[in-house]
Every structure is written in structure tokens, then in C-alpha cells.
Image 1 (spheres, one colour):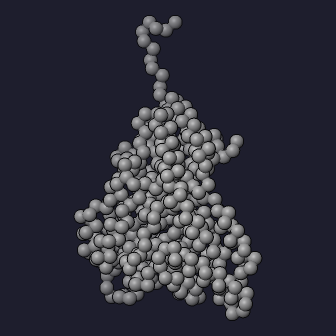
Image 2 (cartoon, one colour):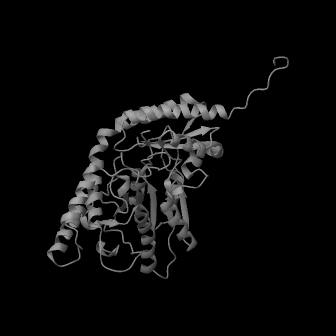
Image 3 (cartoon, helix red, strand yellow):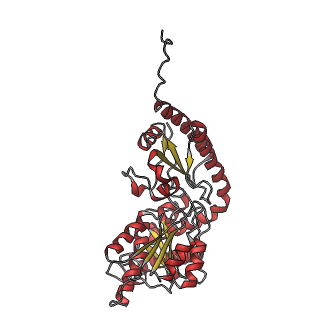
Length: 397
């Protein structure tokens, strides 16, 4: 049986152009970019060119682009590095609050909890199913002068696109820096700094690039302190010998993703709609999480009444369809994530949750086949949960 992979929001295969670019670096520029000889110089040139390519795409200066070891590290460095700088720059002053959306990925919410344990007040901002912030709460948060505000661009559970621009405009007017986790913003226009204090995180393997590398863009107007200590690499923010091939790979992946964004959006929306329709045809009461809001075309989250999530995922896997219930970082947890809890309400735990996510190499034929499998599996599972009706008196033979 040919497998159909519909879990691209967890990770996606490496693009062929990325693999080719990395092979070339590993063959021709494999040296340590800090070394003074010609071998090191070749690696240094490759690293510098990769940084310039990323900067040009994202609207930053090359010195504002930092290559780190994955999306989780990028988010932690943005958040904890910001508050570490605030602590060292004014050691006698209390740390300001940290504002974050109530829908954040664990790589943002966990460092937030760490800060809370150190006495930092957290201000969680609600967002509605249209991706809009609670404006009153946002205004109150900004009036308190937070050290940083963190808002994801696209929710990894359901694909909802948050109103990042509205948050950026309000925060810039208040002089508050904003960190945007852009890991899932693969098919959306990324926010640009445009003179605003915007920190942006992007994960390599979500883009069809290598694992273990990410981009953290930090405007020169926002100071961070390093979380690790050693050499002066990455302009003193992230010590350690640079992964030159990884940097070239993520630069290539970013370029290919941004170029394909406008081309594939319509096709992905059509494929997503097919999956939604077949699920709703199979059983009653299906809920599409954040259906009415602006969503990235590559993610759909389904709330399925009367279905156990683990049973559904196992049944799909046996049929050759790889899917998930949400963020891979929540693997092993039976509890719905924050977005599902928010948008399905108090009955969220009564639904089986299925997240299907499309990628750069997903084909219409694969989705057509997967939609048929999904329909068949749901029909079978929902029938099995219906108890047989008691026989009427006198009807038995």
C-alpha cells in the first residue's frame, strides 16, 4: 500500500533543490567559517550569502538574521533572551510583564511559564475564531509596558491566521517589540518589519528544509542576551560552530516556499475543501475548527463526535494515511490543545480531533484517495459506536 502523508504541519520532506544546494556546500564549503585559511573562507562566503538571501526575503539587514538550532530554540531565544537582557540592563528594577496570545505553541507557552516562575507577570490575550485579538485586553496589555508580546502567525492546531498586522501596528505605536512565531505561515504572506520592532522565527524543516536549523530575525532596535555562552558566532547571540550547509538549505527552502506560495494557495484550498466535505458526508455533527476565520490553506482540524482520536488515527494509519491530532510537541497527550479548547468550547473533550495538513509535494490524486479512505473509516467507526436498537415487543422470530 502506498502511504499518503497528510501531516506536513509536523514536518515535511526536504525539497530536492534544498538537498542539492546542501550537497554542494558539503562538498565545496565544508570548512569552519571562523577559520582563517581558504577552506574556512569558502564556508564563510557561503554562510554570508545565505544570510543575505534570507535578509532580502524577509526585509531585514543581514546582521539581523541569526541561524539557530531549530524553531523551539528560536522562540526561546527571542523570549528568554529578551527578558535576560532586561534583567541585566536594569538589575534593580522589576521585570515588565510578558504578553502572549492564548493560542501559542508550547515552544512559546513553556518559556512563558518559566518566566512566570521567576516572577514575570503573564498577560494572555484572547483571540476569536476570526483571528482577531480582544482589543480591550490588547490595549490594557500595551498600557502596562510589556517587555515583549508574542503572537503566532498561523495556529498549528487548526491553521487559523491571527491578525498579526493589527497587533504589530498597536504595539509599534506603544513602543513594544513583538515576536511572531511564523513556523506554520508557509502559505501566507509573512509580516515585514518596515521599521517596526518585529522579531520573527521560522523553522527549517517546516519549509521543506533541513531539521535542526531555524531563522531568528531580530531588528537592531531590540536587544537580546544570549542563552548560551562560548564563541562570538551569530553576532554574539548564538555561540557554536555554524551549520553552513543548514544555513544554505534553509535559505533555499525559504526562497522556494515564498515563490510557490501564490501559485499553490488556490489548489491547496480546493484540496482542503474536499477533505472537509468527505468528512461531513461520512457522519453528522462534524465541526471544522475556526472554519469561518482566515486560515492557512494547508491545515484543517476536524472535531468528530463519537470518535476516539487514537482509534481514528490508528485506523487511518492502517489504511496508509498519516495524520495527527495536532502539534507533534503534544504527542502522547489526550487533552485537546488551546485552539481546539477555545473554538470547540466546553464540549471539546467529547470530540475526536483530526488534523490533516498538506505540503509542497501533496498531489490532488493523493488527496482524492485519502478523502475516500477518510469517508470509509469514519463511516465504519461511527457505526460501531451506535448501540443496536432494542427489538420491539413481538418483533423477534
